[in-house]
Image (cartoon, rainbow, N blue to C red; front, side, top):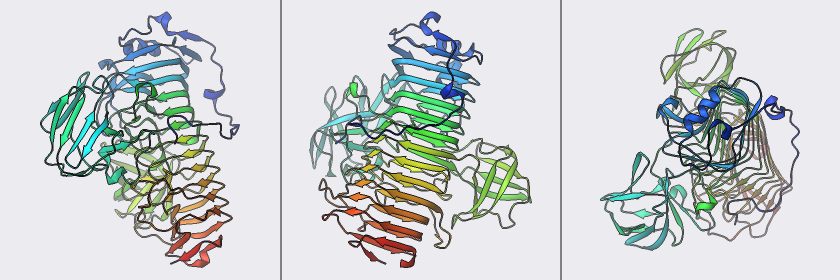
Length: 620
């Protein structure tokens, strides 16, 4: 199994892409931070020193260089600022470490340095900045904001855990533990489901755990005892316990800061960045244009024997446009999805007049956004079917409060527009190219793709605990918008751990699962998805689940059964195709031991599918 870094060379694709000035310009000036009083390896905070240096810069192209070593960043009240960050709780103001606001033409080269952060803080924030490059830096915390433990013993009546108190200091209380360090503390007690994740020595989440839980029993009547420093005994009645020697992630904090927050900025490049820990999303790009990430790794710190990296998603893109390029990046040990690309739908509250609509943010982790601007094109979507009833152009966006706003349009909106509809911003959508990456075992899925731009996913390796690729889109629950129109998934390797545990929307290794209460077979939501020349090694039945797609091709793939774990998934079909049109499954190599060898059709006829794999049977 893969651990930490992608083994071997994979096919390298040369992406010839003329980015803007950020990726092509040469800095004409260099600043070495030690010349400005910023010393290495002192253990003292450089938050104020470094930000004062940045504040004094003009727009002249320059490179800021850190001599290699350790640099510490503590919260500084001069660098607190409120931000509404999508998929993040409204905990404000945010505490900022490196802060670039209204800056241009800057390269920060840390030369392999360790940037160590303390307490609840956001390591990098780019606000309305342009042509920024950050490279050769390791991001970590002195005391992580989520704890870990090793399972020493288990039985139906006890679990014995070993905890490194130097990394995860704690004290006992009658209902669990209190983790505390550097001005913060958080209570933790044993629970089921997603707040406690088991990871084995190979950094793989064991099959059929995940959201199903790795520990089960009576959580209301437990006793906690410290047998000796770093050795905690939990006694109670258990019906399921984790494996001895495996590690438990003891999630206790909330998602309050991103590791990097790229906000209304453009032409950003990140290169040779290791994000070993965060207190929320890893790298959040919100309403940005043109982002390039190469060798950006969201992984547990291998030098500290950790099993958790980020607290939530790894690379998260909301409302971005232009080109997103992700190449040669690794992700492992995340509490959520390694890559998530989407927009944000907003439900209609009421039609104020013929050209003005009042809307709200539907999710408590997606409020206060600068959702639209003059000239943006939107689509009016019926929630039940996810069908568009027309488009409009914004002439004015007016915020009422963090939860509600007014949209004024150039022309009258549809007469029937009411609370049964949502609105999607079509102007802030991106193309995405994801190549040569490794996706290890994380708590949820792999890549979440919800953008109408051109998407290429090629030459990647997946070991995800849930679905390797999820193509969703909805205006009913998460409100993460984006019907796809051109997605190619090719030359990827989907290894045995893929979809070995259940999470939301994980009906197969590749799950195309928009949240549509009333799917319309005549008007599918997604379009033009090609899955070709990939290898799959399933131990269970589900390979592809597809709901509401017009133009779906699964061809020339190789499927070989693995015997690494016993089948458990509730879906007993290799392919489940629901309310789709123009589907083809052909030219695939299917091993003799593959389970099922079947296709299940729902809400569609056989006239809408072409199959040229004689070993596959069709059921309805």
